[in-house]
Amino acid sequence: MQEKGTISIHTENIFPIIKKFLYSDNEIFLRELVSNAVDATQKIKRLAALGEYKGELGDLTIDVSFDKEKKTITVSDKGLGMTAEEIKKYINQIAFSGASEFVEKFKDAKDANEIIGKFGLGFYSAFMVADTVEIHSLSREEGAAPAKWVCDGSTEFEISPGEKTERGTDVILHINSESEEFLDKWKLQEILDKYAKFLPVPIRFGTKSESVEDGVDDKGEKKWKSVEVDNIVNTTNPIWTQAPSELKDEDYLKFYKELYPMSEDPLFWIHLNVDYPFNLTGVLYFPKVKKDFELQRNKIKLFSRQVFITDEVKDIVPEFLMLLHGVIDSPDIPLNVSRSFLQADSNVKKINNYITKKVADKLGELFKKDRKVYESKWGDIGLFVKYGMISEDKFYEKGKDFALFTNTKGEYYTLEEYREKVKPFQTGKDDKLVYLYATDPDKQDSFIQSANKKDYDVLLMDSPIDSHFIQHLEGKLENASLKRVDADVVDKLIEKEGGYENLLTEEQSKKVKEIFEKAINNKTYSVEVQGSSPEELPVTVTMDEFMRRMKDMAQNGGMGFYGAMPDNYKVGVNGNHPVVDKILKSEDAAEQERLAKQAFDLALLSQGLLKGKELTAFVKRSVELI
Image (cartoon, rainbow, N blue to C red):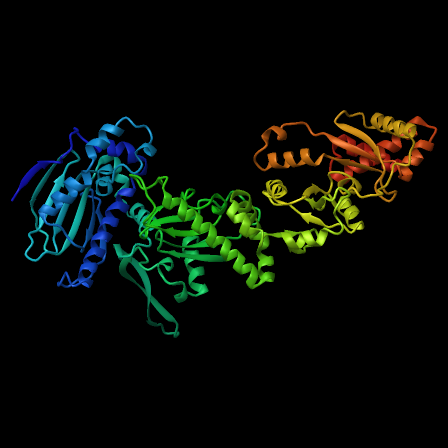
């Protein structure tokens, strides 16, 4: 029997449209054909297990091969096979169900996103790289005749008797002139490594050389020889398909090295395994991130039934967990034509919520199980936790129990523990609790020491996300605020009853202010004479807490308007300090100005703000004073 026919669609030719949308990702043809071969192989195994196929299964390895001279790529399986009628049904009809609607609707679309989920291509992606495609198949059915199907990339096809003698299907692609890059061993190996590395059926791609022991030489040392062995490209039973109880730490670490050969060992991992209300398996690893906030993204690989799909998983994995590494496998994630875009779907949201919960549960479990070990890892995982608490309310509720505050002494506290620690000392006269924090302990040391003298504690907030975390915390904490330790003198940061009064008269204060304004001669510094302990510095230079915070946030993304605003500083002159008394007692205006300038420059120096010519002049003046 020989038959020619037309694929039943009402348009002239669908293939140019397929190519238009998928051309940028044309290597997926091999993923699709190998996936089809795997499906056919798994189905014959299932039928045999159910007793519906009585024949010998034999070796079920799938073969991928190419012939550079004939310009062909062949994918061969020993699966179900198809009769001529089944080829007509599955290749010509089902694969093109809704095709005419697809063509009419999307022939003018400019973006592949517009055709998400509208059309299942699979097999027909072969025409992205092939002028002609042949199918040679022999069905599992007893007494079935082999069949051959040929299509040249138009809507016409030809079915004729085939010559295949073994059960299964061979798909032969006659590669077009634009796609000859695929007629290369290393290119095909690279694609198979990317998409087929963990498929559940062995995939053979030719052979490879291996060294094996070959006795010993005259000196009794081992000899080696090179032998050709099958090049099996995949691991058929990756760890995420196995039960966690069957796996050891070494298995997880070995798999991590397989995925990321050059990476440091991860801190820990989470094995995902759920089959209701959706199907999801996988392993997520927490890498060592420290403050390397951006470089680690796109490290989670998405699979569907062990077929690699993409490493663009932002809709499935919550944004704050995009820094994790590992694998997620779910057949329930809807994909578009090229499987590279995810659909908006209720399952995606459910999966996102599930992953968030699993991560929170794991962190809570680690914290309770061994707090010391958890604290030792906080430098690496703190970024995840804080990012999660900012971006997901549900995660915040869980996270507040295992998020840690670190102070400048290197001690760790949960949010509740820290509140209890500082409440007795750091509650101001307005009954509001104040958390002090430092972003750069070296630069802010004098302010930290001033706080410590009063038995106040100072938190360390120096990660890239802390400026946003501080803002978020203030919205959550009751009757509490966070203030940077150098935002003002400590007595102003936490105002207490009976604080230090400025002992200068109004006239003296006015005179001191005028002397300092003249000495500083810079409108971005506003001078204020205030009362502080005589033991504090004579002058402090600070930036308003709100303004400083907005600038910090602008620096770390967001609040760009504030980042562009000029810096404005407050110069706090301690009216109770002996240096101010010395300035007032001096009869020499030049001497007054020189002392004021020196005290101001010392304040700038302590903040790292004294630079260039001003620093040179300060050093020279200091030498003269000595």
